[in-house]
Image (tube, rainbow, N blue to C red; front, side):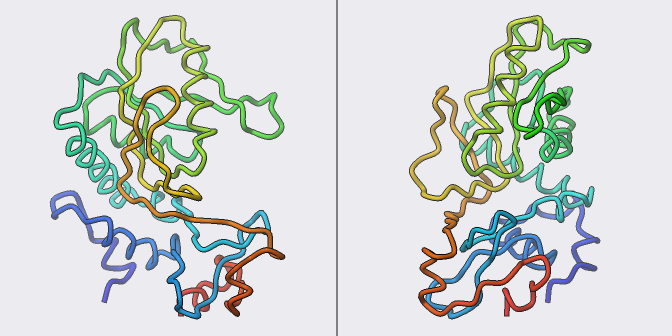
Length: 235
């Protein structure tokens, strides 16, 4: 039986896990879960108050350096599998603040620097990003974007735009985006508007509903708060 203690012993010298194995990691660390249809089990109440058939809190896994290193390696492996061979990469970046550590581990594996956009302190909603030119990215550099969790791509797009607007030199972007968890409300494709392609290590369709419209409630599934009632959610 997989336990937190066993996970803490995992390291990069061991075989890399499959997506299904990592889903078990998420369950063990109380960090992720997807509703099993016709299971009769409980479903999640999100922080927003919406009801959902899935829940991920990646930071509960990514705060552990050994697990984060393994997951970074999984992303690199997936990128290489899909691309055949990655183009020359000169740097890596990810959305602040959730993806910065994971992007840094991917950068270390590729032996390139990680560049760190920031949230704009003048934006009270924390959705606008900035990139300070005090550590400029060289002219012509090709950058790989790495994200820990993607739902709508709004923050990912804002992070890329921050680099375009804030860096004093023109750069380009790898045609692939490495993503740990892709959890769109509908699996309608991985192509982004700028022509890049999301390459997910794990992909799960996750929906959310207003409580009054929740089909799981109508099917007699009990809504619970994952952080407080994890055992009931996964019973």
